[in-house]
Length: 387
Image (tube, rainbow, N blue to C red; front, side, top):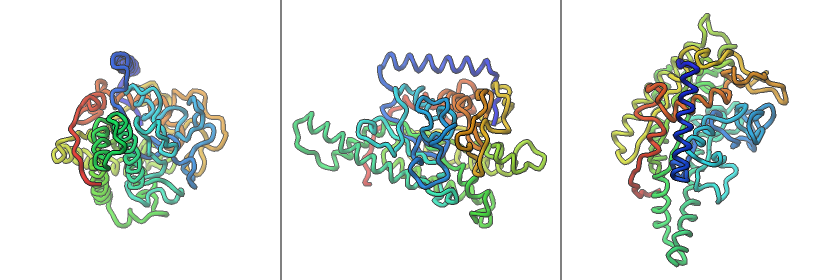
């Protein structure tokens, strides 16, 4: 992973985006959206895997060495891209994981992301328990019911009603959820921890990479439509990055290339279909907006152009699954590293990715058909549908 932009451009863009965010928050006194819901994998997980019987959990040092809460279960040294985005959107606190669900937080959103999770249920199974996209949607349905109850009680109290009909509660919840922002980042583990692990999974024997991309998008499409049915109207779909350029992929052999080309080609085939899916969703579901975050584009170019000095190895010594070894001392110059461990970016990279996702001022190709800052401003009517 690398960048085409120069360090000065990054600094200028960062200053501009932060100033715009601060201005918006100071003028309105509230976040740009009332709530933020996150679905995804280890790139977004903020602690949902901590209590699972899984190798894909990182609630130990040196993870979180640069995060105020220490080792919270985030797969990096500090903030994730989602954490930085929540700040850019004006939230005072980071969006909490679903595993820490409580009534005071859910109206501002929840994070359902789970390390090793994928679009397909079996992705990541060799690492143990994880929360697949289907399961994350079920967890969100639980959240919606609780939000409906909370809003129903508020409405009943305001209008001196003892109780409200369940249909009215659902209507209130859908109306509220239509204003929220949703980020969905899935697909990486369907390749890294499925297709390209033939010793554990047989998908590479059943599908060509083209066929597999088609199968993934077909299933993903149904999942995204279900999320829309649950009330989502502002949806961010994050593409798969250059998975062939992770330190773990490179260490396994590249056949003379800088990265593992066949892995990157598979990611590109998936992303091309994801862009087509965005177009289809925007054409068929006119009362909503879906946007694509071009992680692949963000990872193209020279890492030195963004101030990074090391891109082929991680900042910490890794174990057999590519995560930092327990209680090891990581590198000290973390801002100069693209990767934290064998798979996951450092906070320095996450910060730039968040800025480029929030505002496409640096490179218009980063987002399609608009960036997150513009998506957040849109308003949509809500339509009540049966659960």
